[in-house]
Image (cartoon, rainbow, N blue to C red; front, side, top):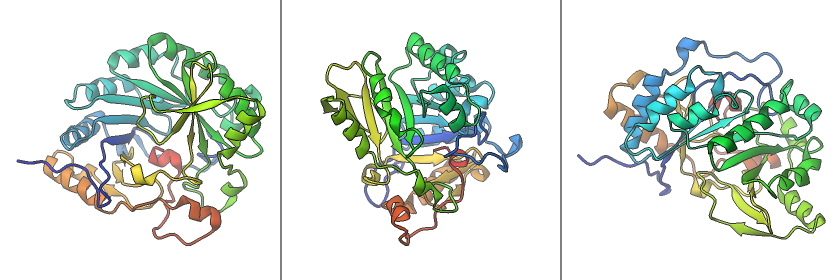
Length: 335
């Protein structure tokens, strides 16, 4: 029997699944969660590790090769290395990555690497301890910095630092972040603020187009070149400062969207397939787990609804969009 691959109507081949393992987080970053009032899923509503593994086995047979574990904060889920080990044994899976805030990572990096984790993305929106505490509403930057060192020591590479640029909050730290790449083999990725799950237009007050990163390079007389050698699943345009060991990247979903090359699907912690991060369409897969053909057909159905673009730039211009924007917060989807 020929198994249909995950190719959508715009001829985009999907070989990458982002798996949220929890909607909970130990931080409350200002762009991701409100300070209070979040309602989290009870534990029994979350997909079990066996259920997640069952879905991935089906998708591996449809061409999925790359996985990313997200949250919330995935490391608040107990024994995440057990899930990593289960997923790493699935034939066809070549890459398992983790997106984390890094608070709990230092003590678990080696165990995760041994279980089969390939690499990590660590969120770090400020190098100033007081500002970091403000952005995360209480986070300890020293724990994140210790996690970066731990990942380097155990060989989780490449290490990517995710920096959400926010106007008037951390845009004065662009040069400091780029300087980190001079003597460390890390990739600092500047990300535009996105209107995911925001019920109003206040996010626009913090939005900053990433052209400013190039302006900072010019101010510091840094010459740079575009690079394509960085192993990546993502939409980052990557660059290297002349003489630097590491690199920096730009992820600009608003000012220069990358939808035409999108290769990803999302599985939420409570068992929904989301074909696009920005839109409200979602499909409950948990009810058919165990019936591999039903899982296949549901993913194909979800993929058939995936639009050509997320149209986030229309939010900035206050133009009408063609689909209903999601009301889920980023932590409830998995980013």
